[in-house]
Length: 124
Image 1 (spheres, rainbow, N blue to C red):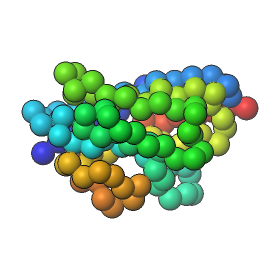
Image 2 (tube, rainbow, N blue to C red; image 1 turned 135 degrees about the vertical axis):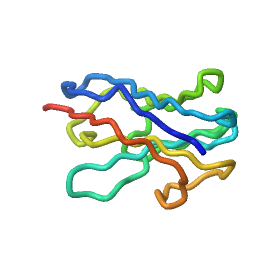
Image 3 (spheres, rainbow, N blue to C red; image 1 turned 180 degrees about the vertical axis):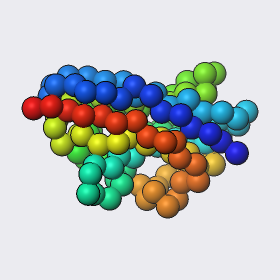
Image 4 (cartoon, helix red, strand yellow; image 1 turned 90 degrees about the horizontal axis):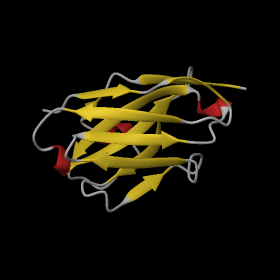
């Protein structure tokens, strides 16, 4: 069982930066593939980024590639999403997700554990 708690969301102007954090419970965090998804009002939840259990591999949605960076610290049971050059279209609730040793999927249904989400609002 893994519990995930996101933090770091907020209101930022276009062009600004935010860093999201996702703190995980459990002793086997290092064996979980961790991902970030987002859901804008009236839209489906979409894949943002994913990182392997050893941080050796990452992947990004085309819409954020080059602007967002995912990382993890297994000693702190935490995964991060550094978001730079934010755009109004990045406005959404951002969710952290986890799946055990499965690399990798962009589909929400493939992930077993979810946080409650943290809201990011980018003003123009």
